[in-house]
Length: 506
Image 1 (tube, rainbow, N blue to C red):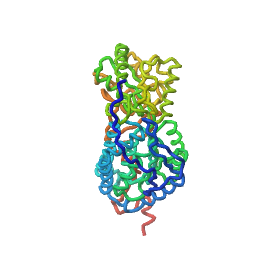
Image 2 (cartoon, helix red, strand yellow; image 1 turned 135 degrees about the horizontal axis):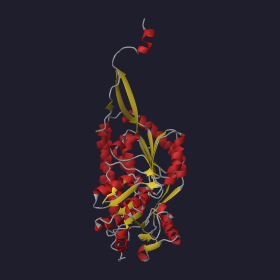
Image 3 (cartoon, rainbow, N blue to C red; image 1 turned 45 degrees about the horizontal axis):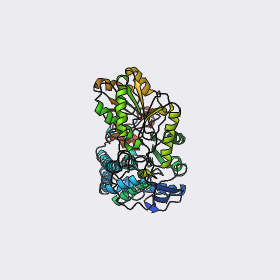
Image 4 (cartoon, rainbow, N blue to C red; image 1 turned 90 degrees about the vertical axis):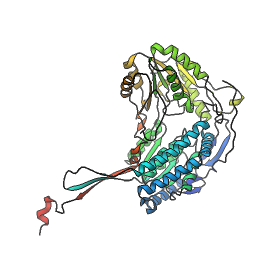
């Protein structure tokens, strides 16, 4: 590691900690939440989270707002104007949003600036998609005009994770509002501040009061309320698989639709014919950007045996050269993890893997030195010497930890890649397009990247298979995911139905 570069120490005023309860700024009455800066452990803000009573008020206000003709009576292009104004507000406050999110999560400013831009783009995309989303005449099979139309579900609970809050928030809130719903957003307790900043922007955009709430708080209290309440029509959740399972069971009791974007243990694959420079850069970015705190992180690396030793040697050298440092430093590539307790959990998983026989090729510990004191740092880590059935290859670490494994031929590779409970993403590095197509189609996953990794487009659906979740977000159909489909049959004959024609004739 090199000497810590100059740190951008611009101060900003953080949100004051009040909650946005059905369009009203109120002090929370739930359990206390402490937001810390992961780079040094300093406290950003102490606030009261949402209680059940806060959530109930938000739900009542949302019901009234969603039923008000000022919202439900709007035509699609009129709703789209609200989304464009929210996008304008995000763009106007992009630097402030980025800095709040960096304080909340420890992500580099480079990344949080990109996430703010992504959030604005998401609102613009769904505004445009809304204006071009049509109801449909269906093919006639009789003497009736048949149509399919879409209507809002009602109240949507959006539960988002701490790792990319502003982008995750937009990915759920924008299509749900576009569809004509009211939205109650529950951000993670580790990163509540940037979602509260989004609430300020939404309020200033002129969205009718009550349609949007931000309710950070304990999952067992506010989360359970949002899932179980009879007036919540759908829950969209991004987070851990075990929490997702519990939420799905709760939703099943009320036959409520859910969208679940859960964990991953994504394979990345390097064939002997790959462009090695391109593959090295892609593998590094796929696992170590965002400090590995990404559901689609490429955490299982399969390298064709004929190039395994040479590739891994170069990969280890490149990993050791990554810049680990303060999130405000422009040179930083690997920032602190979100919280000391999360960093300690990552360290425990590495220690357990080593005890079970894994070999540490680099990293495997926190960095030393005054620059890292008080921060939740962990060095980029590469492990080897295990097989695909090792625990470290089965469970999501959600940190900067990569496991490398060799493979022999396509059949062996596909079997190993699919031998996992998760199915979220996959990366393939090869110059042979037909091969990439075969492998990509054979692996059970929601997203395949070929000679690139961890790139997204709001126009392209995203979601997982197996324990990685159910449902899809993004894309034009992302709006319909928050709507109910209704069929119409309109008689064209003016005559009574033949079955009862004789009985009604007089």
